[in-house]
Image 1 (spheres, rainbow, N blue to C red):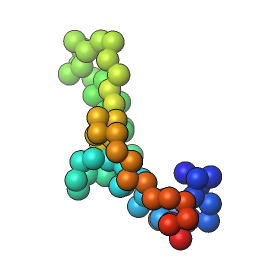
Image 2 (image 1 turned 120 degrees about the vertical axis):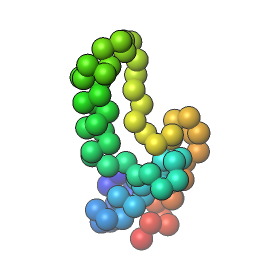
Image 3 (image 1 turned 90 degrees about the vertical axis):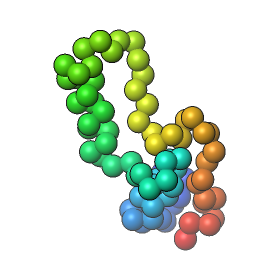
Image 4 (image 1 turned 30 degrees about the horizontal axis):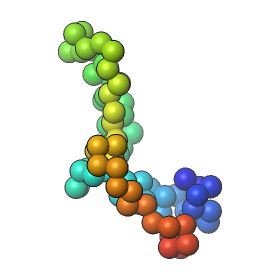
Length: 74
């Protein structure tokens, strides 16, 4: 992201990433990724096999990029 948006600070990059998802009000946080991994490693997922668990806030199901152009970031 820092290569696509050179000069953008960390807070700005986080704000851009939060707008990638299609689920209104839900942001990608490290805990969300960790919880998905823990689910797959838990007994609750004992019958889950051969599945790619996509944790992307609906981005790949909608495929509409809300990312600003690099020149619109700063």
